[in-house]
Image (cartoon, rainbow, N blue to C red; front, side):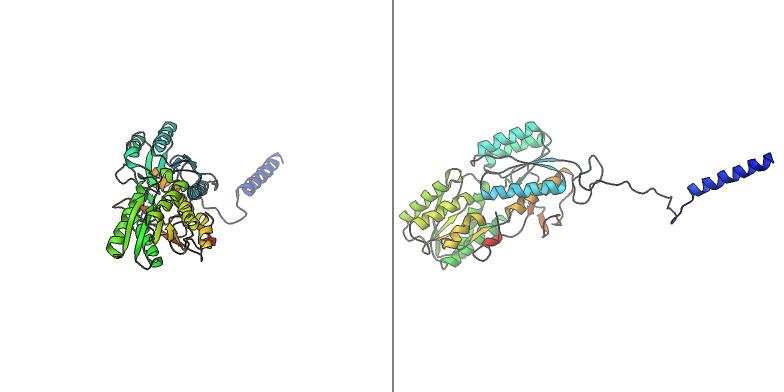
Length: 360
């Protein structure tokens, strides 16, 4: 009897053990364990592969605009913040209230001391900035440009709003339509050393010389720090010196209000055409009053977003493709390896039909 009781107890134990270990549902594949759960909000670190749309680590990416406090560069900053949140990186927008190349050098030196991972800059003066850009690269910081280029520098890539030639030619083509492809025009720019502004002006000259023999550029004026007040004064002087002038071009976005206001104050709305690279919020009152018919630009918020994405690709050693799909941007972004230019897209013409569709 004692042996029988022992045997029964052992059988009961065996039944319990088998009940605990046997599956009650579909059998599990024991050839590989299931992947661990992942945090879909925070970026992974180290050498781990990032989740889709996330950077591999919390890179620190800085951008130095030409100046801060104007709608254009505020929109770029907002786009950079959008990208930083989307991709899981830290974004620093570090600028000065005035357009000053020496100040850009100082800011870049500070960022080198902070040992950020990448610095993008909208170049005001290549001669001043090229040496400090090289020092940043020597310190192990990825350096690239956006909004305004320095192609002779060590920059890894230029994140361009549009091709410089397209910007220069588009503006002249639109102005030529307004003045009947004939007459005197003047140009009022920002700082005389601004690489992007001078490049666009060179292409404006080329467009006039090759396409519009009856248009004459009578003068090119520059303003201190792209001041709107200085632009107003320069526009007044041009209209006084050339009373038959047909059009005025405001190259820097900060000069657009001054030039438009000068024409408005002179009572020459409809007589002197005004065009420039002004944001919708900047040009809206002048388009609605009839002082301006059009402005040529791009979406600076999208440019700021692309700028941060490009920095992440450079830091992670990911090569740009001929066409790049950027999470968060609707259209593919082209890359030109010969010039190392990452192109946001074609210029945007802003007029009465679409000016209210934008808020920057």
